[in-house]
Image 1 (cartoon, rainbow, N blue to C red):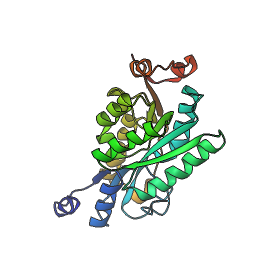
Image 2 (tube, rainbow, N blue to C red):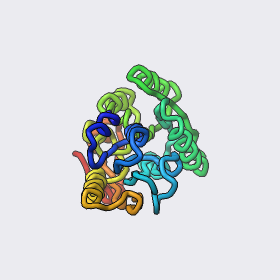
Image 3 (cartoon, helix red, strand yellow):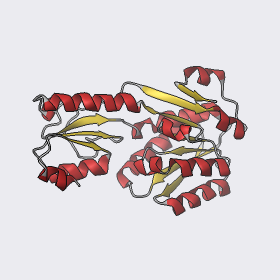
Image 4 (cartoon, rainbow, N blue to C red):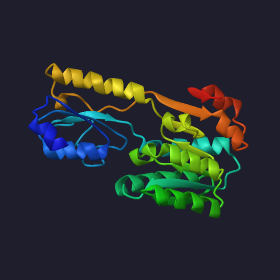
Length: 247
């Protein structure tokens, strides 16, 4: 698909996600590429610098991976008695998984919480992961930021309900289909900025002159129907901070 866009001589390519970005970058070194990804593009070797990305690539990192610590903090606030928390990773995203595991270990070590690491990359392994959560008696689950999990959000939310495991996700879309809670960048604001960057390039700006940016707005979403089904009471302080509450 990336090669086809290059053959069509498009003026700009917008790539959402690390795999589409790598495909576009491999297909052209001249057509401007504006991206949105959840990981650190410097750490991933996609660009040399956030301030001056050089070449034909610029865009926005949602730093979704780096927000793992905040999600553990929110889970601990909602379930202060939690002694074991699981983290679900995409088995295919090795580099992101390593970063996530490191941040997760840091987040639980100070609280004396045991960390259960689970991986999945298809529907069957998702079922197995939730069965393991139940078998290990984990008190909560943190789902890592990953496009595969977002595409499977309805299945994951249903599994979390079936196994009665309080779960926090990256994006509000999980909460809208029955997930308990989410914390992550405001997607609408991020996409608006992508449009602005694309417009600047169409008007003659060079990607190398447009620094890679990070989001400035983050949303906390809660589903009170799911909380009630799980037997949880959301603290008033958390409700007051929430940007979206589904009742």
